[in-house]
Length: 305
Image (cartoon, helix red, strand yellow):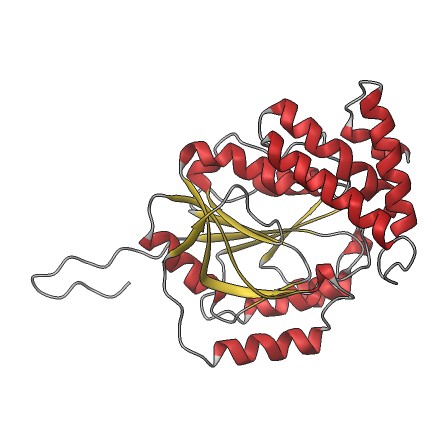
């Protein structure tokens, strides 16, 4: 930190950042993310990889001694909770990002600056320059081109764009002081659909939850390593109802996403996208609806499907 000028206070130290990545079955994609994080204008102080086995990891040469590697049970929520337990006490912010997220080169620098400039914010998701989750996915080359073009432009304002009901799990950052004893709900197994909404709702008691354009990146939406169509379809129906009962999701929001997803699956079943198992999702939707009709609200049942 530079010395203070005469008559002026010393600049505040930069906030310290930890990055937690829960990954499954995508070692090459994970290696690409590690390269991007190391090339940041201000690299994070701590990078934690939470995986299920050695096969999830890229070669040791791509990991290096500066990375914390954790191996534990499968599941987005479980893996992220394991990561939380190993965040250094001196880290002020934690970024949860997917392994197929491609950050702007200035992403972590601007993330720190954003939280420093907005002390009332407890959690934030940044701008997505592209999101391949709703299509066939974004290639690594295209994602790199999009990010490079963005980085050549002017720096964005360090201001919140909108207060949000929940954040987007592919890139969401929180103050570690706000997290405290809050954890991801491990009753939402495997992909943990809507776990980002649930976690954000719990953190919202300690500060604002917002979206911002202050930091940015691309979510590639890689299809490998994702849950089956039946399991996703079941979660689309049961998870929102479970979270309503828990008190972390509003009833209107839950009803809207259930109706939207069930309707979309039915409408597209005749001519499904090659990258989506619509038949499996419809089957999962109906199993979930039958379970709800019988009074069974058990998100963890997807491990049996």
